Length: 438
Ligand code: SF4
Ligand code: SF4
Image (cartoon, rainbow, N blue to C red; front, side):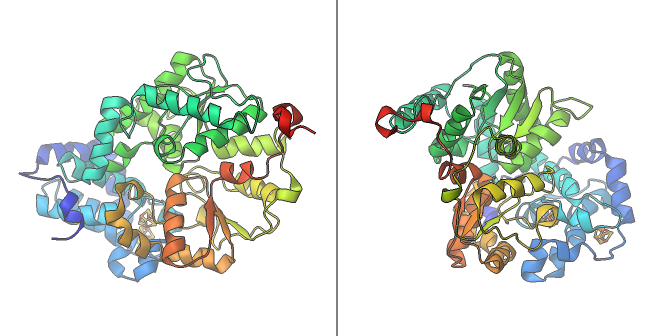
C-alpha cells in the first residue's frame, strides 16, 4: 500500500449521476472546450515545478489534466473508484493548483481550475485526503479549522496584550469592536503555533493608529475545504467571514499573510457564497497591500540602521503574486527593509510555487518527502540568489521553505513581512514605556 492510500476516505460504488452533475454544473461546456482545444503542444510542461523536478512526461500539466478530468468527461462520468484513486495521486500530490502553467498555454487553458473540478468530483465520492476532511469537519462545527472555541482567541489576544505592555505602551488587540475600518482575519496556525504573528500585527496596527478588530467568530480566513474539493463547506467558510464583517459593520476584511485565504475570500469565495458578480460583499485587502500603503505614506517607518545587511530574497506566494496581483508592492516593501535584495529567477507572477500549496502543507509530515522532492526547484532558486533571509507573506510558503532550508542546507532564515518589520520598526516616543524613554 502506498503512503497516500492510507488516508483516502473511499469505499463502495461511485455515484455516476452525482459525478455527471458536478461535471456539467462547473462550467462544463468551457471545460470540454478547453479539453478539446489542448493541442498537446507541450509548452506548459517546463512551466510546472513537478515536471521540472523529475522530468517525467506524466507530470506535465496537459498529461495530468487529460489523465484526470479529461478522462472523467470522456467517460461521461462513468468512472470507478480505482480510477478516482489514480486521480487522487495526481490531483493532491502532483498539482498544487498554482496556475503557473496557464501563463504558458497559448490558449490560456486554466488547468488549475480544471484540477479543482476534478478534486470536487473525487471528494463527492469520498476520495479525498482524510487530513483535509478533518479540517473541514472542524470548520463546519466551530467556524475554524482547528476547532477552537471563541474563548481561545480571546484568551490568546489578552495574553499577548499583557506580554507586550512592558516593551511597547498602548498595544491593544480589540475583539469584536464594531464599525472599524479593518476586520483582521488570521490563519488558525497563528493562534496555536505562531501567536507572535498576532502580536507583530497588533504592534504595527497600534503604531499606525489603525481602526481594527479581530472578531471572536469569523476570524479564520483560511479555507481548506476549498482544497479538499468540498464546495459546501468551502462556501460556509467564506460566509463565516463575510457575514461577521457585515454584522460588526467593518469597512474592509483584512487578511493576514496567507496566500490561499486571499484567493478564497477575494476571488473564489464570492462565487462559492452565491455572489454572482464575483465581488465579495465587503472589500477584501491583503496584508501586503496595507503594509505597502503604510510604508509609502510614512504611516509607519523603518530605522535604516536596522535594515537587513545580509542578502534577502522574496518568495511570491502563488495566491498573492500570480493569482492575487501583488508582486510590485512586496518588492517596494523590500526596498524599505533590505540593503541587498536579490530577486529569484524567475520572479513575480512567473515565480515558482514553493511546493507546499494546494492544501498539502497542512496535511502533515506524511507528505514531507514528496514536498521536499517537488521543492527542489524552489530550493535551487533560493540558493542561486545567495540570500540568507527569505521573506514570504504566506504560512504555507514559510513552513515549506523552512523545511527546504533544512533539507537542502540552504543556510537561510525564513521570515514573514511582519516579523521582519518588527525587527526594525521605529517606535514613536509615545509608545515607549517610561523606563525606555530618554
Ligand atoms: S497548476 Fe501548477 S502544479 Fe498544477 S500543473 Fe499547473 S504548474 Fe503544475
Ligand atoms: S500549453 Fe496548453 S495547449 Fe499546449 S499542451 Fe499545455 S494545456 Fe495543452
